[in-house]
Structure formats: structure tokens, C-alpha cells
Amino acid sequence: MHIQVNGVDIHYELSGRDGAPVVALSHSLGSSSIMWDPQLAALEADYRVLRIDTRGHGGSAAPDIAYDLDMLGNDAASVLDALGIGRVHWVGLSMGGMIGQNLALRMPHRLASLVLCDTTARIPPEALPMWDDRIAAARDEGMSALTESTMQRWFTPDYLRDDPPAVVPIRRQFEATPAAGFIGCCHAIRALDYLDRLDGLSLPTLIIVGADDPSTTVAAAEAMHERIGGSELAVLASASHLSNVEQPEAFTKALLPFLSKQAGS
Image 1 (cartoon, rainbow, N blue to C red):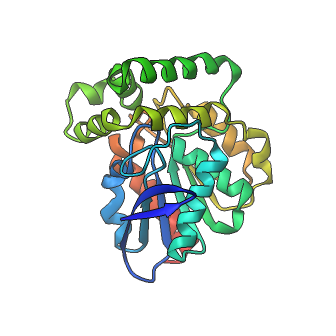
Image 2 (cartoon, rainbow, N blue to C red):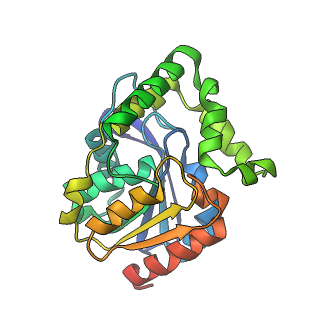
Image 3 (tube, helix red, strand yellow):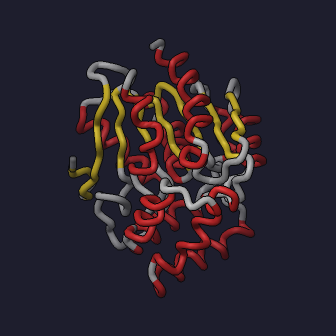
């Protein structure tokens, strides 16, 4: 389904149990709502599940401008407003976790709980040239120029060696992502600097990270865990950046008890 918010056409899917607490799923850079397919059936059994394609991704429009995290957070809040949803349990992976932090810091009343998956709260200055290189590659050569290096960050070598079918739609979606949308979100991510503000959060928070994630590392997860009082941390063995895809059972096993405890379901 589609909805106009903040002058942008946003694609979303709403499924699951009517009247149940709402779980909002937010995807990584270069992906879309499809990356949550491994968790969908388990969540739909007990929750209303909202999947939003971030602007520039999936079925949403891709304005050819630089985005920022406030813009992406406002898009999410506006979707909730348009659907008449007051609060959600926010589950965000990578970029989705950054948007979740933005909402938690600016609009904590919209969140019942926060799950930060394979994400970070700060992009260090030494990483900025890498983001500039990704922007240049997408602009000058197209998304396919970034495919192989991205898959190697998103999944462990052992997993890729087995040529699992779950990688096929992820790869296809990455290459279908509009360069303008990817670049717009890269600008938002490279400005991320929330770490020193996280100690002000009081939301129930779960942090999940793949033990082998080279992008948003276990150390980055631990840094968030140390600052968010009462937060929980789950490290998933044999998983890289898209831990929910590579280790779907372990990811879901970490997620569901946390949500059940918060939602009282």
C-alpha cells in the first residue's frame, strides 16, 4: 500500500493480528521490507506488523536530494499518524536502527520499546571517506558496482559459500535500489552522532548484533548497551550484518521474548 507523507510517496505493508500491539520493522540501507520475510510469520501470529520502505528504497519514492535522519524519522512518524497508530515497538536493522534512535531521542512517546539490530550510534570521522566513496560509486557506476562488496559485508563467507536462496532476493533488491535513494540515505547515515545522547533514553531496549558483523560491530553494540540503562544485548554466533537473514531462528528467538515481555502478549 502507498501513502503520501511529507511530499513523498511511501510504500508500507500492514499485516498480522487486528487490534494487537504494533511492531514496526525498518530495514537496512540498500534493502526494503523484504528483508524481514524470515520473521514475518512469527510476528504476525501475535502482533500487527507494519513494514515501511524508507524513502529512496523498495516501493517508496526516491527524491534526488540529500536526506537526513530527522527527515527519515519524520517520514516514519507521519506514516504512523496517517494510519492512526499511536505507539509501536520499533525493530530497526542498520539504517532502520538509526531511524529508531532518532525517534527515541526526538519522539519517545511514539515508541513502546526499541530493538536496535546490527546498527551503531556514531559514524567516526575516519569512516567518512568510505561513505564518500560509496556515494561516488553509486552515482558514477550504479548500484551493481557495490553489490559484491556489500554482500560480503552483509553475510559471512561460510554462508555465501553455500549459495543460500535467501541471498537472491536481497541481492536483487540491492541492485534495484535507486541510486538517488541510496545516496540520499548515505548522506543521512554519514552524519550519525547519537552515542553521547543515548544515556538519556529510558525506553525498554534490546540490542542484537551478529558476532561477525564487520560494519556495525559487537563493540559498537556494546557501546550503545553501556549507555542505555536497562538495555539487553544479544550477540548471534555465525552471523554478519543481516543477522536476521543469516541466522533467522536465533534472531527470532532473541526478539520474541523481549517483545512479549514489553507487549504483555
